[in-house]
Amino acid sequence: MPVFITDLNIEEVNKLVATLGAPAYRAKQLLGWVSRKLAVSYDEMTDLPLSFRQKLAAAANLHTLTPLHEVKAKDGTVKVLFNLHDGKTVETALMKFVAQASVPVKTKSFRYTVCVSTQVGCPIGCPFCATGQHGFERNLTPGEIIDQVLYFARWLQDRSNGREGERIDNIVFMGMGEPFANYNALWQAIEMLNSPEGFGLSARSMTVSTAGLIPGIKRLSSEKLQVGLAVSLHASEDKLRDKLVPVNKKYALNELIPACREYFAKTGRRVSFEYALFNGVNDSLTQAQTLADLIEGMNCHVNLISANNTASQTLQPSPRNQILAFQQELKNRGINCTLRQSRGQDIDAGCGQLRSRFLTQK
Image (cartoon, rainbow, N blue to C red):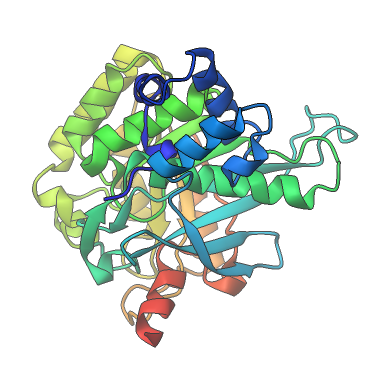
């Protein structure tokens, strides 16, 4: 496998620079060009000696991804399908939101969130997810995770025309794959994206989403960086969750929910639960009550999601009036919940859908 700069942690970058006979401070310059100045070639790094740049180019490639296809939705969501060095593909989405009222409109009208993938395919196999239907192929490397963020940071920079504030505000690891099944690469990417020598984004602006891998939840609770946790719940009873989120057969609700309570007790960080609503499957008022019972007394937040349209006849989105009734029932029970705004519906921006079309057409 070829060497890529973005696959290296800070210690490894320092070692590479030393191996090439350059002074130690060149490592910081190199990282600055990659993560802050968003260079796409060594030729751009004009404050590095030409001889050193030539040695770098011979020793390591700069970035891991090549864009294959881009689609843009009416709401500003952009999704890109990337080619990896081995010919496999992965997708990433950039979502655009109106900035909160607390942010001065003159300085920043919009906020941008990158939805990042951590695996090629996914081993979980949820029946409503396009990614899961194509199975699991391999884990992404730290560089392949980081480069998704850097690509869209560059994308915003290129299209900002000098306007202030066109930057990435949040990163959510909610794309293709189960992040906790690729924990080491995920965490190296998070550390580099957070590091002042790297991308420099606050850990509190990053969220990791899991289907419920309890060892990953416990491990995250012991990390020093204050990264957010989201758990894809989608059902409040094991029999149904076994079907919607098959990993529930290994990590059942009677273990998962206590692990989430323990996470909050240890970190003080509120857990988010993701709940996609499917018509006649998990959207009844009785199921809302069961959900409220399950998480009662927990410092948490429920994100209700209008499910994506899929080819499945049994997993269709709930009608809006049913979603609102479900939400109101949770609120009546004192559960903090919001209806997540759907993004990119006109381009099928749900996880894995762009890649699924690409694979079908090959």
